[in-house]
Length: 112
Image (cartoon, rainbow, N blue to C red; front, side, top):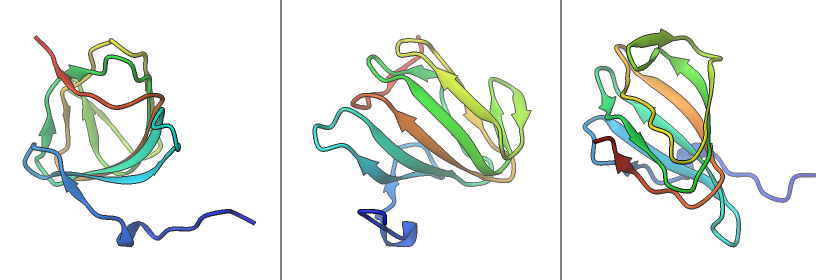
């Protein structure tokens, strides 16, 4: 049996500072070293190119269209990025939902 069960609809949505982009914290370990989040991007939303200083990132596209650096991807696409590497911009035409695992505490460093 699982030790924890949570309905995503019960988890607070946090605005990320980009219009139409919210994040829900699905889980994090007790030491704060890694976390799983669900990010929702409304139709037309964008997240600028950026990097994370210590967190490797694994992204799974659950639904909608996801545009990474100008290339469109469908549900089921998977992305992996090593800490310190720039990725994005991320965009969507119709909206999308993605599940992301960060291997370490999360920060957001805008690309130069």
